[in-house]
Length: 154
Image (cartoon, rainbow, N blue to C red):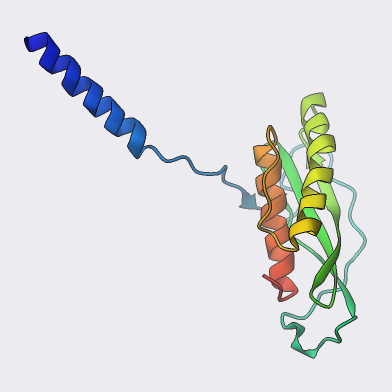
């Protein structure tokens, strides 16, 4: 009888612990410069800084903004976004420096085109992450959010 009480109590405590557990997305940090070991990434061509308020821009004006270089545990990346008015017309990678491993490069080659297409489809930075590329997805989303915020769109 004593054993039954202990087992039931332990099961209840374990279940409560599992139900109370909350995961969080991987953390990313903004880093000035390259933020990675090894050779620095090729510098992106200078992009014009956009105004913080789109109120003074013409509806058809095309603007480009590069987000900050974001360290995502296996490397660093920054996103370039081009908008016409309030519509995102192009999303790409301005800088990419992964850890040089074949696995990281393979993940980036597969996930980044999906992330770019997702951003074009939803027209904001609230994009779904790519399965198997959680860190790359989080870094991409963070840089994209900042670039869109600089353009006055987020």
